[in-house]
Length: 350
Image (tube, rainbow, N blue to C red; front, side, top):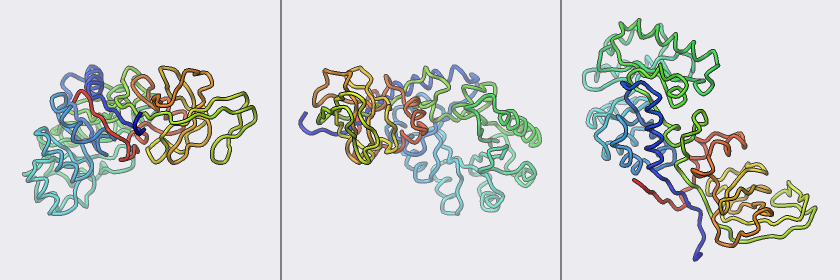
């Protein structure tokens, strides 16, 4: 060990394998739109696009600059999912052949100028109550109702298949599609919807977190990133000694602590609870004490062979991210997207 540092290793073969597993769930005729917003959920937009270009049918992003940058990497369809709001932005979409979304009547006058130049995804609000047109507003979109365009919605509770809102949303979407004369393509499911409601996959399935292995609905999906750092010191504590800022936990036995060179400035969550699992030398150990900016204390009392320089995995294919998130009342999306730029990146199987 010359100079320790936290590392993020991303294995794109695992991402591609996850895609194939999800494809087996959805309709064979449903196209697979890989959602790569927020820097591909922390997996690096450029490298992800390169790695997946032969494995998916299109890409979805949120911001215009992401879409333009992505167009330089891929000739596949690209959807800007939140729409644009200026002539300049529409001109960029037209120039780069990027699809866009309509979710508000306020967008219609400007969008109408490009109705013959772009593919539009018309977003209907079926119960998420975030973005989306109301059913009663669809008649004001008549010029956009054509076979090259897509009617879409977003599911609020697809990760809970027993939630009654799912069926309410499906029913409202079907009603809206019939109202448009069934002349639009359809897109309903996200990652959880693809797994729990594959019959709703229709023409396009929009899959994000599932590709990266951050979806607990399908445990065979593998966490594609390994977030890890190295041990740089040890402390041998007696019974009754307190640990870390605030001394929030007191030892109940003689305890050996490993001090790992990583903290919330690297992206490990500051609120992480005592007992959160990590992995050292193929053995489970646990966080003990409050996470600080640069250091984490790990109870390795039952891991006697640890040494300075050993790697501590915070999540990986062998230590799935979902239980870590659930233990700390977080979601895998947040853990993936908050890895700091100071963490060294390594990309494999691109």
